[in-house]
Image (tube, rainbow, N blue to C red; front, top):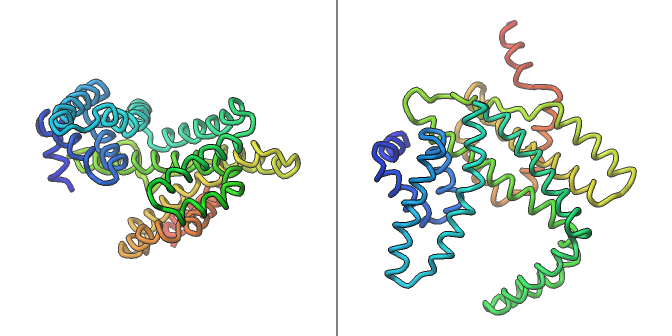
Length: 298
């Protein structure tokens, strides 16, 4: 990985080419976003904007030559790059990955509340979106999927706000972490903004989640229930950080960590819940500090 990152940032043309290629690969929003994060951390926002603009221009010429949609290309690039660029800029200025992710959790909560403030009842909005998606599936010949979505839309619609916010936040958080990992491959950049394996979202967020959950239980308000869910579920990233700590500073084999990543797409709900429980309880009890203190006293 280090030779690839060194090549990427060795010359301006390499950076432009790397951004262009990553935007055309599968899972472009993750891969290209991570490359952009590494560029912002290493070179700053101005250089990242210039390199990103040059990459879009290069791809636009190629797209025009083969008759593909340039507006679609630009939209994909902006979705993949802009949010994580802002996170990387904040991280660069605060010099803290933990503070950046804490700030992003607050933004996720505000977005959740924004759905209710703007739409009143987001379930109606999501119901329409799911029906349109069902029609699209039917037009693509996916009759079974369309029928299933039609049947489940009434159940899914009330849950879509919290799921949308959580999935979006999780993707941006992982892209930031992956881009930071790429950045750390450069010489003298190891853990400059903190180690991912030391990530702790903190007791303040944990307390806010507990209070929100209690209020949601008492009032039964949908907006409080969705907010509490998002605030709890984001701790899965802290749980993942703990597993990385166990691999780097503890007894967990690297193969076990790889297996957990491999199982995430299959057992996503179960694993995410388990990781969120691990991360949330760690925010209160700080297992890693206790383990280090215990080891030091032996």
